[in-house]
Image (tube, rainbow, N blue to C red):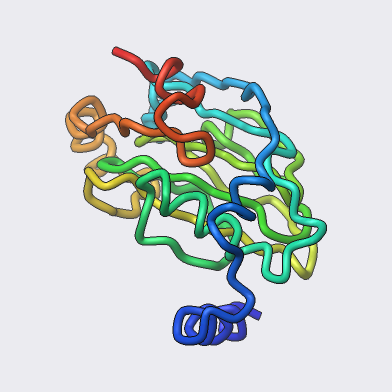
Length: 200
């Protein structure tokens, strides 16, 4: 399925077919206040004790979209979150120590856990958005066969993939606080909830 999505995305980029206009993408957004989750370091996964994870349930209406993934790509791009990809969520606990991440659920349903193995289990579905601060452990516990995620990153930060080793943990405790905070919410822009909830 993910190879098919990559081909579809390339075709859409070349032809414009199936991609929503920016106006249509913005019209799909519903005003939602996010649920917030804050996790302490559990000894293996550092999490982020300062910046909460944000979960926007049903933030984007996708029922009339030709390509639901493209709606998220347009929204994230216009709000300054780039380097987007289409895939699933890894089924092992991992985190990024030097960059924040947004996940838009384009299709299907899943159970994910955020905050590491001792964290919070969430049921997520198409239209939901998760904003994960640097250091936050996350992984997929189970997913429907059509589960599809669009991920993206703010302009500042460096992508890495950490799985909880001692060496990673020691380094991450230094890099997480230094990770630049984005100036824009990936769904709602400069005046979105993230800019308030992640303010210094």
